[in-house]
Length: 192
Image (cartoon, rainbow, N blue to C red; front, side):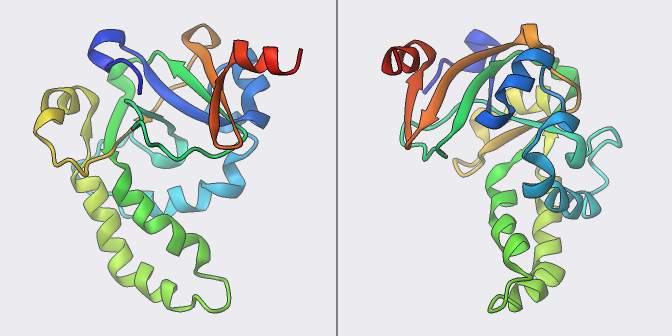
């Protein structure tokens, strides 16, 4: 969807529009996202508890910001999101397969809802192994840049950014509304 990282040295971050004002004013800081603790914090803690020894101590999913190298043309978007381009310090980034983490997210959220009790057993047994697989197949950002063309096509790289991103390193590219993407100019024209 966007030019390749090798050309731009830009990653992409999708944020809830309710967080956008703070992001543009103060930058991206994991601790300042309004939507973070309700949606993801407990899941990140579960993933961190299952880290493997190949992951350096400074990589902590619970404290990471997340970004993507790009998006598919047929990407399914969540309404009321903002697409941001961000510049990162490669030395503070780690890459893992988002598909592996996503496989565990729904069972993790649903496990306490009546009718989904078996998901707790799945997470306790197989889920822990899948989380370890996530970490075993992860790598530092620079290694990923060297290996990415040789990885399986199902490796959907998510970048864990372990430092804050300053406002000057963030650009608002578009707003997702009703599952379509509009640029800032298009949005302003719509409501003129």
